[in-house]
Image (tube, rainbow, N blue to C red; front, side, top):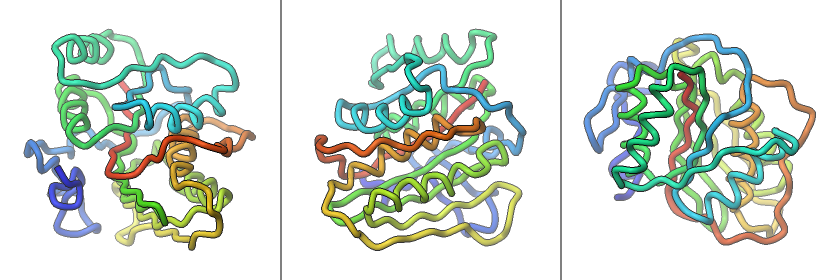
Length: 229
């Protein structure tokens, strides 16, 4: 499924989220994209869909936790994964999940979160090629500053990118950042910066996203999220 054709984030205009839906399943996100404040905390669970995204995304997240181990789970469509995700979301404990997954897995995760009454702090769609990466984001007040941090980290590594954020209940105009490619390093670095920014969401951090010398190419279409119960 091409994320450009069957977009996870869909709406008539950036000025409103009334029509935002998961087009793959027709699920409304309005009731989980809540404009709620959240106490900053490190993620309790990281969801990834393959080894390449895990390698890059997790490196960035670990730079924020500074040695604290993170629980990582690969997504699939098995009953075991669905039951484990349901258990985490219905545990009665306050937990935070972040992830970088394929768009099909994202549909399952967001629907499960919606059913559990969880709060979506951040939802993003990403496409990456050899030359640059593109990022289209929806966030809440709880994710304030996360997009700017992501842009700062990507700019520091010299990869070309185009980033656009719409804040729920915020300005009618999207927040936009862009930079031309200044480095020959692989564009997989954007996923490291993304893992760093989402893990740091709501928490003060003086660290920076690590620069990866080599990594499997991370190109194609992805969805990121931060969910809190």
